[in-house]
Amino acid sequence: MTPAPFGARLDDVVVRFGTRRRMTSDGTLVKDDDATALDGVDLQIRPGTITGVLGRNGAGKSTLLSLLAAFTRPTGGEVRVGPDSDGQQAWEDPWENPWVTSNVQLVRESGDLQDEEKVSESLKYYADLRPAWDSDLAGRLLDLFEVNPRKKPAALSRGKRSAVGATIGLASRAPLTIFDEVYLGMDAPTRYAFYDEILADYAEHPRTILLSSHLVEEVERLFEDVIVLHRGRVLLAETAEEMQGRGFSLTGPATAVDDLVDGRRVLHRQRLGGTVQVTLEGAPGDGERESARAAGVELGTLPLQDLFVRLTQVDADPERSRR
Amino acid sequence: MFDGPEPIYVQIAQMIRAQVLAGELAEEEQVMSTTQFATTFRINPATAAKAFSGLVDEGVLYKRRGLGMFVAPGARERLLDSHRKAYFDDVLAPALAQADILGISTDELVAYVLGTNGHQQTTTTEEP
Image (tube, rainbow over all chains, first blue to last red; front, top):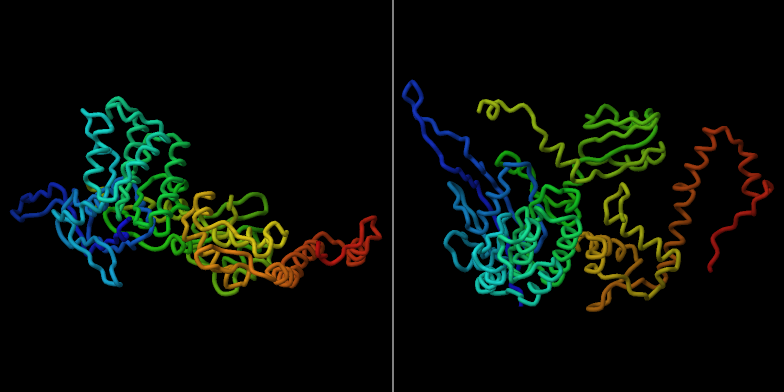
């Protein structure tokens, strides 16, 4: 039986790597913040959801995910992980906590395999570690991904090693299963097979799945919740539907579209002959859907990918450019 | 699949309504489960569930405990009724507005509708 899905909460979490203190010429001590991976993160992960973790390179995704699995200890703040029981959050600090860590499976892009042993040995190791491990599923997935378990990880291609990681994550049936860019090196058919297996197994064995990916377009429909990290901070954490509501598009004859825009800030504008498409922030106003239709203007949602790109666009940041 | 401008759950609901209207889904027939929907169309099961709960509220589907979702009795009749009402606003009004832009006269439109233009006279939707 699968245990209840785990949720997680972070309160004002800071993670710094290799913090250095240095003396300036006038003798004051300053901290170098260059290695701040997470900077005051407040976050809640709902139990039982597939949550997408998005962010640009270096945004802090891997650090966040490794905190939940106790691979990293926070420099400051509090991390709590656990299931809801009777509406109560029985959540605990994952650090050096066998009960939490045995129920959290983090699959990193490195795969964490025993390189000198056959793949089957790595699987045995995870089977012993995870109370809900399903070895039938593991075998079926290796067949599906065409991985020979008698080979050593070093003899596998990048994509096949990722497929072993995907297998470990799915077969763990861990109440909190985390895939940190596990798709790397997988070809498109393998990635889609991986997404299908996530959905099928999630439907059968409800649990919390965190998935970080740069292929937003491919995975956005899998998400119920979305977290966007930007430069070590939470830019947003909400349902995929709410994120979808952060912008919309109007497409139609230029004059009709401009009438509807009515002075609001246009994020993006495209023109093809007399037809214009504009992207606006926020949600359509009251009755706007009707007035758009009456004016022959089509009102549409934006792909998460577009919203993500706009939200995390590089803007002038003196703090960063000084480095 | 579901590449339209509306949210996916809206598009799923539209697809099911269209199937009921066309008679592809008969009354009392079982519809795909949220799990089947999720894996078939590669979407989060909660998205499919949201479409279903909206259709339950509309009286198009109903839930049988432990069995799944079924097309409600009278669902097609109700959909026909509401779609007929919306037809004038949603379909005809934009078409007439376009005719206006193109300078097509009311006489021409009437002639077309009455079939004096070589076309058959249109009738209201019939039961199959």
